[in-house]
Structure formats: structure tokens, C-alpha cells
Image (cartoon, rainbow, N blue to C red; front, side):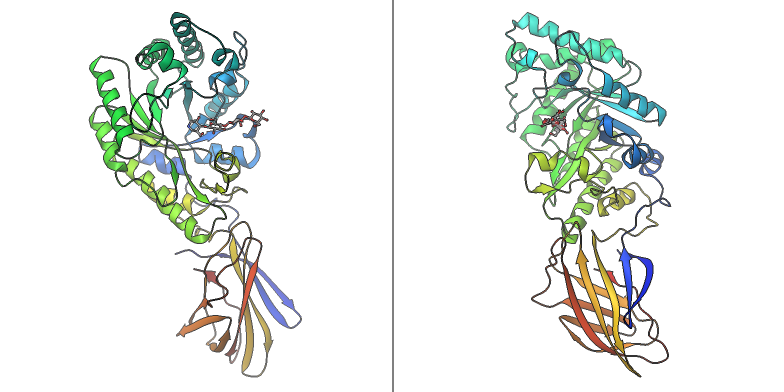
Length: 448
Ligand code: G3I
């Protein structure tokens, strides 16, 4: 049951009482996600940007997560922008932050077709040159962080949707065995690191995940060092594949670990309470699927706050894909992760960024006129219900601009046909007459 917390700000305005409601600013009393995950033997991680690891962002990254993945800092284009000239600044910073906060690091990523340096992609290389460039890159980077990286996304996104190999600089230049060689070179540089192949749209059982399954089976049969598969899980609200847990289980049965490596759940903007609730259910089912399978190592979210997500830049009109909003307030998805990790929430999830204000407009011997304003900021609603409990026997006698029902002391007012929509930055007001005797205290209103 969600409710808004009262800001306990009581203001008397021209003979009326107004009670303001604010969303919770923090959740300090709740057990951090990382403690809940650790109790289940799981990783809960986030992708991070090194330059942001201060202030609230740094506090949350350190307090809530037990694993960090550099979102961009370890990619080839970041670490070797000019051939032979390395820049490890951001990668080092993230690894140091993780060590200081007793966190794992997930290395991301050694072999990919994106975010490679121009000198590499624009060069004209023989197959032998390309193989040696790749071997040197892997050896240099894995050796640098030897003993400090728990798991590496060695190969990223090798497949097309139909399960054929993606045409890339690596496949085209080296053939399919670039994958086995990359794993072998990485293992030589850090034998203790867990080595993964990572891809998207492989969360459910489908042609692409089956190709990945067959590759892993083949690699294991050949004695190639492969420890796990990463399911990126860049999902759309309401579309968690029904076969997610079954898919995690089949890889696990093959003898490899599974990690959800880049979870986010995007929605068409603006967000509203229904979409945020569905998103929470989606986060919960993904985390629960991992918790249910022993060899699922854990879940990493691809940025923990909406203001740090890649989604709006890549899918215009979509966003709000992470567990915290733009201002680092936890969203319903955050509380859903808590619950999937076996925790209980001491702070009720806020109902997006919409809230209700109750005020007494006028009052006479036994009657009064009241008003409730539903307003949204940073979110919107397509329908609403305002609920409250009268504390002193008040009764609604008549309402306008909403349909109100009262049962005992409980009142529930639903929008009229014409005012269910509350846009971001907008508000809707309805009114009522009621009876009272003795006292007429202002109730707490929650939005449902
Ligand atoms: O650093 C430059 C900055 O100097 C410049 O001003 C700015 C202007 O566009 O671009 C900045 O680089 C951006 C970089 O992120 C760092 O913010 C790139 O344009 C942008 O394309 C790049 O996007 C990254 C994307 O991978 C590239 O494919 C995202 O941040 C990153 O989150 C995303 O991560 C990938 C995973 O590695 C693999 N799985 C999919 C996932 C999402 O695309």
C-alpha cells in the first residue's frame, strides 16, 4: 500500500487549513540494497560514471551497491584513444572508489564493436595484425587490474537477433574464434577473474539466447575458459520475458554463472503512477528470477538514477528507466528491489511525484466546505483516487468534480470523467461539503 508522507506543515490561510504533503526525501531507516543482497549471496550493482562519484550520487553508489561497473571508462576508446597512449584516469578512479567502499568491480568491456578508438576502426589491418592488437589490448587492460576485477564482460554483443554472428571488425577480421581467443588471453592475464560473454535481448528463451547457449556449450566442451553469461536486460515497461527464469536456469545447468548486467526498464514519458507501478513489478520479477537460481550471481542496474541513464539520449521520448528519479529520490522500483531481495520497506514508496493537499475552505456551526488539490511535478497521472480517514466523525454530504464515497470514517474520491488527467506541473481540484461536531481536524490524504 503506497502512501504519501505528511510534511506536517500546517498553515492557516485566510480562515482555512492547508496540509502539505511531500514525498520522502530519503530512506535512511531502510536496510541498504547491498546488505539485503549480501544476505542472499547476491551482487547488486550499478553502472557508474567516475566524475559523478561525489555528493549524493557518490553516497548512494557507495551505500546501496556492492558492485560497480564502469559505464564507459574501461572501453577501448576510453583507455587508448591514441594508439600506444593510455588514459586510465576514470577507470582507476572507479576501481579505487570500489575498493574504498568494499565493492566488487565488473570490468566492461574488452571486445566490442562500439566505442573503439578511431585509430583502430579506421586502420587497415591484416588478420594477424588485428589478432595481435586485440591480444595486446586484452593483456594490457586485464593485467593492469589483475586481482581487482571480480568479473569481466570479455566479449560484448557478438550476436544478431537471429542468432547468427554479428558482422564486426572482430568477426570479419578474425572469424568466430575471436571469442575463444579473447577468453583465453583474458584468463592468462588474470586467472582468478570470472570471464563472461554479455549480450542484449538474450533474457528470454529465443533464437539469440539459444545461439549464445550453443556457443557456451561449445566453448566449455573445448576447454575454453568461460565462466558466465551476462544478460544485459535493457527492458521496456511491462515486457519482462516470461521465460527469464527458465533461461537463467538453462545456462546455469550448462555449468556457467549468469548475471543480469545492465538492467533498466524504460517507459514512454511522461511517467505516471501506473507506469511506475508496472516498472516496479518488472524490476521485482527480474531480481526475483535471479534470487531464485543459485548460479545467478546478481543484478546490476545500468545507472541507478534517471538523470544518469543512457535511455533518453538513445530513445527520444523514453526514459525514467532506473530505480531513482532525477533528484535521487527512490522510486517504486527501488522498493520493489528491496522486496525481491527479501527486505521490508519501512518507508512507504512515494506515489511518483504527485501529491494531494487538503484544505478547509470555510466552516460554520455544524458544516464545512473542504477542498483537495491533486498536483504533479516531475510525473503525471491519467486517473486518480484521493483517500483519507476522518479523525473526528466528519461526514461528506455532497461533492463536486469528483465521485466520493464514505464508509465509516474512510473516504475515497475518484476523478470525474473530465479531470482524471493531471499533467506534469499541473493540478486538479475538487470540493465537498461535510458535517462536523466537536472538532474538524485535517486528515492525511493519500493518492491511489
Ligand atoms: O564523452 C563524450 C563527451 O565528451 C561528448 O561531449 C558527448 C557528446 O555526445 O559524448 C560523450 O560520449 C558519450 C559517452 O556515452 C559518454 O557519456 C557518447 O556520445 C555516447 O554514445 C556514449 O553512450 C554510451 C553507449 O554505451 C555507447 O554505445 C552510454 O553512455 C553507455 O551507457 C552505453 O552502454 C552500453 C553498454 O556498454 C553495452 N550495452 C548497451 C549499453 C547501452 O547502450
